[in-house]
Length: 217
Image 1: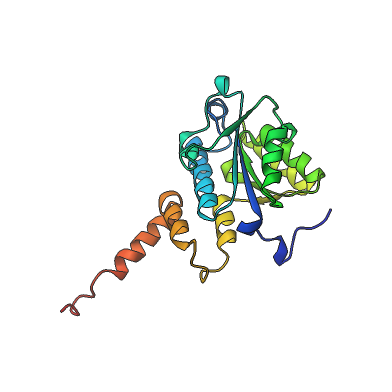
Image 2: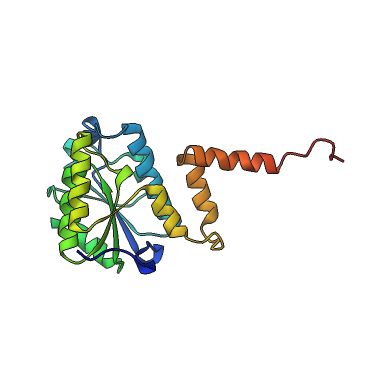
């Protein structure tokens, strides 16, 4: 196995492309590896982070007329964007999706979806075999059981995939706080979706704007 390490292995927004797979009602009803509310929050945060950093994002569903439309929290981030609806369970066998990814010219493929053991594992393993640099955002995924999710993660690691969480991905895209172009957008995502970190930021801003007692005037 080729180890994924060194500075060049870190995610860069200009080289990243995100594929969000099957964040649909049917899959959510049998999601048992995570709190469903957390998965909706995390997948939405990932989508917003990608938009903030200008990372192309492909949205895809499977048989949406039966399984339901992708969560509006995600599609609202990309108003008017086409959602590619498939019949293939394995997204990477759908030519329209693969062509959309290739058209971006990006080489760092980032994937999240439902379920981890099925609709995430299949395209990840195939794409790895075709030479793609693949990262899975584990907390924007979920399986029908804790075991199913964790076994799928181990299977993909064994195939050479990189594992991260959404806030780690966003932080790696930011990399340096001196890069101020996207900071305001990232902070907004954190305020809405990063729970304690977002609230702590708001608290910090409150304290910075609170006059020191006795020094007023």
